[in-house]
Every structure is written in C-alpha cells, then in structure tokens.
Image 1 (tube, rainbow, N blue to C red):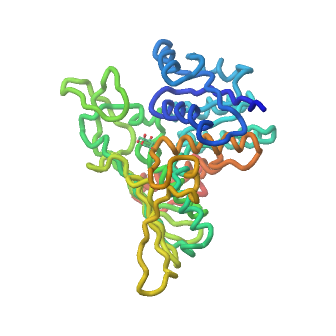
Image 2 (image 1 turned 135 degrees about the horizontal axis):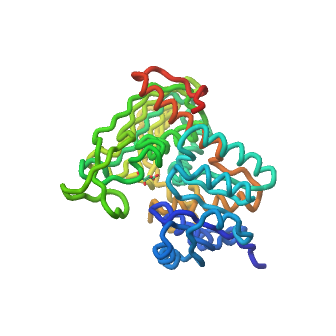
Image 3 (image 1 turned 30 degrees about the vertical axis):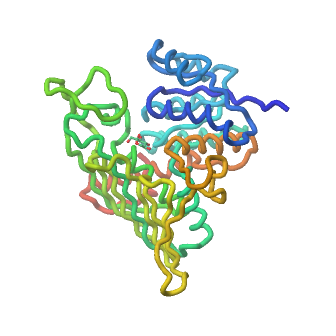
Length: 395
Ligand code: SOE
C-alpha cells in the first residue's frame, strides 16, 4: 500500500527553517507515519541562497514568493519559520487557501494578531484543516513524562512553579544586532523568544493558566553593532561598525498567579553569562515535585513524597527507556536524544493529527493564551510592576 503524500512548503531558511527541514526529512524514517511528508518547496528571500538551501536541505524546489507558494494546488501544508511580524499574514493566507499550518513560536507579535489567527484556525478546522504552534520543548521525552506524572496526580496539587530560561549570546555588548532585537519584527525580546517557552511549558505541564503577573523588563545593552551579514546567533563586530538601537527587552523577571492559586516565579534572559541554553523548570505539589533542565534534556528529576520515610529523595529518571514518550522509536536506552529530536516529534504528532483527525496541541488558541501572558508582562513592567490580570489583555 502506498502512503499518501503530505506536500510541505517551508517558509524561512534560518535556524528554525533548517531545523524544521531536518525534521520533515527525518520523521518517517523513525516513526510509522500515516502520510509521507514531502519536502516540496522552500521559500526564502534571496533566490540564489534559497536555491542552495533547498538543495542542501532536500527540498524539491525553491521560491521567493510565499503568496504564490500558498496558492499552489500541489501544497498541502505551510510551515512558517519566519520572524514574528509575518506570522499572522502568512498563516491567515494559508488557512484561507485550505492549507494545514505549522507556525513557529511565539504565535504572533501581539494579542490582536494572535486572536485573528485563532479565529481563522477555528474556521478552517471545520473543513478539516489543522493548525499547530511550534512550542517544541513540549516534545522533550523528559518533559512529556513530567506531564504524564502530573496528570496522573503523582505530585498532587501544584503549589509552586519555578521557571528560568537562561541564555548568554547577547552578554557581549558588541554582539551584533539581529531581527530579534527589533520590536517591529520580533514583537518583544527575550520575553517572547524564550520566556514564551517557559510560559507555555508551565501552563501545559500544570494544565493550569496564568491569570495575573507582576513583572520587570530590562534592556541592558541599548545599541548594538550592525553587521552587513549575520549568520546564526552571536558573533562579534568591530568597534567601527555602525550601531543600532535595541528596541526590545534583554531580560524579563515576573511573578505569576495561576488559576488554581499556585504561585509562579519566571526569569528569562539572553545575558546570563555561562548559560548557553539552560531551560529549567521545577514544579512542587503537595505529593511531590518534578525538576528539569534542558542542559540534561534526557533526564527528569522526580520526588515522590509518598515514598517511605528514610527513602525519600529526588530520583533521576533517564527518560530514554522504551516506556517513555517518543523514546522507543530511537536508540537503545541511555543513548540520548538532542534538540533536533523535539522538532521531529513535533512533525510526528502533527502528521498523525492531520491524518487521524485527532486533537493537536498546542493549538493556536493555546499559543494565544501564552501571547496574553506576554502582553500582561509588558503592561505590568510598563506600570512599575503593578499586578496585571491576563484575561483583559486585548492589545
Ligand atoms: C534563540 O534564543 C532560540 O533559538 C529560540 O528562538 C528558540 O526558540 C530556543 O529553542 C533556542 O534559542
């Protein structure tokens, strides 16, 4: 029996574009998929570079016009890996053309755009069109295991959520300007780029939404050198390079109240020297705790307060046993997975949902709830950290 194809147009050739390309090409080699992903079209801005990228990443064709790509009859799914200022426009056009959509995080640059995307996704869903937002960390086996433990009541009633997402690629004041430092393109800075991951992870793991926040934002380095060409994150510019204003936050710190009454403490920064990519979360309930750090992404720490007295303590679970989410498709126990596997798992879940009509997550509505928290954080920070409720966020 031949498997029907799922023909993919991927828009964006940067870090995320390459990561998604890898996942589209890998998923069916390790997982049984009901549809065969076909990397059909790669869309980028520069014709020659996009053609080279398509060749290297294994896409059949290259193009520079995303609108024309979306209108093509022979495209089934549009994968959006562009900066945030284009997400809404591309997603709305793709959904109107009846294409399934995978959109990178954060969903949009503001709540208004996010709400429009949710409405369009819900209209399209009636015709069987699937949309998903790429909060990739949900697909870490250790975090999926944490979610299962929490859902099964193993840590009981959640009291505390402690999340830190720490990077350091902007620590050097001469690290060059990128689109991620331009509010018009990125919506916000560290907050939306990596703080959004912590918010999504916390709400997903606990099954509980943040209802209010009290926040501080800070831009430590207010201008950065502009390079003619920047490849990837980081780098260093010469002292003579012209400088440009940074219009987003470098760091965010906020406390949060969850609907259940649980308390949250969140920190996100790209200036934590020594932390290349420390994405940590700890959750304490009345029966136990979980703790995770992406630096040891194959491990989950779990504390069970119902263990016999004298034997209690955090246990370190290697989340790569066949019993753990996603793990049995890969290597023998203990051989470990990496960052790219999260994106492959994301494609697996998406393709299965498209084929079987099963629920997909995170939906655009889930991602819009994250967007509202981002907006509340910005509003609180702009009002001297006053407590701001998430529900009223409309801008
Ligand atoms: C840059 O800060 C970045 O690439 C984020 O955009 C990703 O979402 C995160 O997973 C790694 O860091």
